[in-house]
Figure (tube, rainbow, N blue to C red):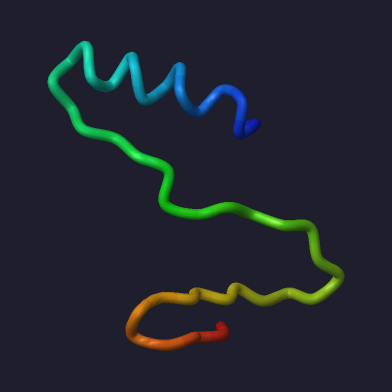
Length: 45
């Protein structure tokens, strides 16, 4: 989904008493990998 639409989805979720938030993003890449960066380190799959 486009980042600009995220707030709409969050608002809809809140109307059902469901908390929602943006937790990451996806970027185009020529490599087939997923990188997770967190307070626990960086993990590449």
